[in-house]
Image (cartoon, rainbow, N blue to C red):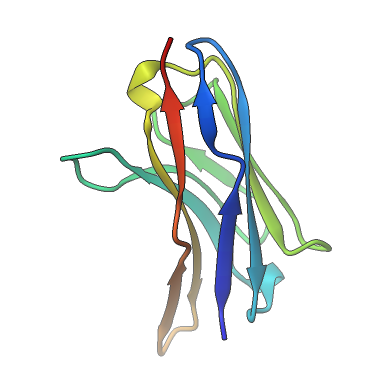
Length: 119
């Protein structure tokens, strides 16, 4: 059974920082690309950042220079360090595990963790 469990969300003031974690189980973690997405009320889910199995990263323009995605394959965990947070970063942040096998695609999601940026 695949599980992705996010943690680290909460309430933070504008300009503050948070570090999200996503612990994976039930998959060969090192073989999956991992990603963070977010969904604000009334808005579509959007990509925040991704990291490939080889460690290459990609960021949405809205978070580039403020957020950093990283992974620890020994701990089956992916992180999202969020600095200089803005009210518009408020959303539920979801972890994704993705693997393209060629003949099929594995795509798993966590339940999400709430991030609220407000004074």
